[in-house]
Image 1 (cartoon, rainbow, N blue to C red):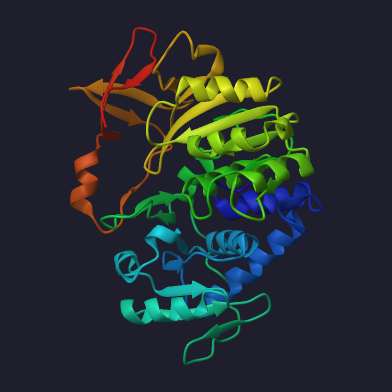
Image 2: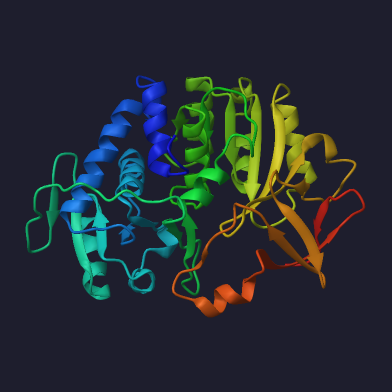
Length: 377
C-alpha cells in the first residue's frame, strides 16, 4: 500500500485476492477485482462531472448497498469527500449544511435527489452501472482523477437527526480506525448487522477489506435476515448494535454456532452485562466484546466478556492506540483515530478539540485498573 488511503485498501485487496467476494448481498457477489474496477469507473465519472479533489459529494440512502460501496470506493479514489446520508439525515437542511458540489443518486433515488438538490441549489446527477446522467446537461468524457493524500478529508458523517453537524474524517483516520491491529479478528466472513446508512458501517466494511475478507450485508432489514446470513455463509463474525443483538438472540440463536467473534458496538455507553452474557451463551466458541465508539473518536474503549462480572457497568479499557483521561469529571480521549473537526464549524471544533485531546462532553471516571465508567449522559 502506498499510503493510508481508502482507495489503496481496495487496490491492495484486489491484487492479493482478486476473485474473493468483497461484498455479498443475497444472490449477488462483488469480487475485489470487480470492486476495484467499479471504483475506477465511479472515480472517472465523478471527474467527468467536474468533481475535483476535496469536493464534497452527497450520496443519499439507496436501495442497492453494493452500488453504495462502489461509490464509496470510487469517491475515495477520486479524492472526493463522500457525504453518505442515513434516512434520518436525508433532508434539504442537511444537504445545505454539507455544502456539496453535487448530489449523486442511483436511479431509485433520482426523483428525491433532484428535489433536494434543487432545494439546496446544487447540481444533481444519476449514476448507473454504465453511464452517468445529469439534470440539464451532459457530462464530458471521463478524466483522470486527482490522487488524494492521506490527510485529505474522506468522509463527512451526519450521524443523526437534530442540528446538522458533519464529522469530518481523513483517509488516514478512516484507514487507521479499520486497521486489523485495533480489533484483532479471526479470518472469515463478516455479517454486518448495522442498519443501512449507520456511521459504523463504513469502518466495519473497511476493516474487513483490509483483512481481505468478505462482508455480507443482509438482503432485508431485521434479525431474521441477519441470522439467515450467518447460517448461509457460515460467518465467523457478527457485528451489531446492542438493540439489534437483542432481536437476533430472540429470533434464531441456534444459527450463530459458526461465530468466532461476536461484537456489539454503541456510542450510548456501557453494554448491559445481561446482553453480553446472553451473547456468550448463544456463541460459546466466540470471543464476545463490547465496544464504545463514536463518530468523532472511533473506538474509545473495549470490554471483553471475561471482565463483565468483575467490572459491572464498565465500558472496558481504552482501545488500542487510544489515550483516555478524566479531567474535571469529563472524558477526554486522544490518538490517531480522532476526527478532523466539524464541517464548516470552527467554533464547535475548537470547543472540543484542544491540544490533541477530544473533549467528549461525557461524565466519566477511570478506576484504579484503567477501566472506563460513564457516570452521566
